[in-house]
Every structure is written in C-alpha cells, then in structure tokens.
Image (cartoon, rainbow over all chains, first blue to last red):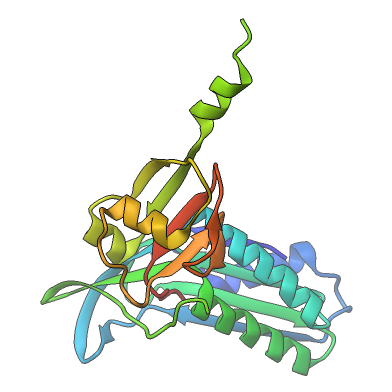
Length: 146
Length: 89
C-alpha cells in the first residue's frame, strides 16, 4: 500500500497495471476502482499555461503513508495505491492517482473516494498557476484545526 | 574528549520553523531556527519567527508533521510548520 511522490510525468494506467501485477494476488480481488486527476488548461475563466506544485516533503510522505494505512483499516481491501506529482506540471498531465482493490465494488469505490477526498482536504500541497496575467496561488476555504 | 551534558543541551536547544507556499513568500524565508528556552505555543513561535507579523486567519500549523492548533505546545527539537490551506490533488 504505497504512497509515491513523483517529480516527473507518469502514466497512471501503466502504474495501475504494474502495481497490480507486482503486488496483487490474481483471482483474489474482484473490483479495482481508480481516480486520476489531471491538470486543466483553464481555471477561474482564465487560460493556465502550466503550474508548480509545491509540497512539504516530509509531512506529505508521512501523511499519505498514514492515509493508506487508515484506508486499509477502514475498508476491506486487498490493497491501495496513491501516486502524486510535485514540481512543474503541464496541462493534460496526470497530477494524482488513487486506486483501491477489493473483493467487491462497494469497498473499492468507497476506499478510492476516501483516499482522494482526504488527500484533497489535508495533504500539504500548494498549486501555483501561471496565466497570461502572471503567477497566482490557487486558494481554498479550508479552516484551521479547531 | 567528553562534552559536558549541559553544553550538549545548550547546543541542541532549538526549534526548526518552516514556512510554505504563499506564507513563505510573505515572510520572505522558508526556514528559521529559533532558540528554545521554555515551553511555548505555536502562535508564540510564529510571532518570534516573523517579528510579530499578524498570523493570517486561515493559517495551518503542524508540529513534527502532524496538524495542531496554534495553541499547541512546542518542545525542544520540534519542527514547526506554517502554511496556507492546501490545494493538492
């Protein structure tokens, strides 16, 4: 159940296939659910030429490793996988992959969504987009810990 | 040569403060080392590290890679990080 941080482009479908061949027992799982988030070339009505994804390396790895462990405890899974880019990213390139393998579809769907929603809400990454107007940080309305 | 334990303690009594993304740009530094003398909270660390810049309302804090409140206690040797709301995925 690895969480992998990459500073280069990756092919999520190859990664799923490779991980499945390497780590999963054939015939033991009946459901594979995956989500791939890719970079758009627009945001808030403006064209975006590229972006930089900054992160807090030690905390990001720590957080994603814990998230994978929590996911396997919370759902009946054979395994799960997270891959996330950082650094310079171009439109159409995959940014994130979450995937879950389970005996049945409900657990695989739920686990895959859980990974993605928790990652979006808490993993310490920050997007900086480059538009014709210049650079800008992407914002959200996340509240501090209470 | 054996170094006296008190000297070792004095050398190592510090905390590592890190800033990320827009906060790093606002503060103008990514990392600051502060001396640690007595227990203090993360908000006080922010004030000492920034020269009393007001902390933005949406600032997130982490101590040793775990999210905490700004009132959380910081101990000798801790890594304290401040950053804006996250936007990964």
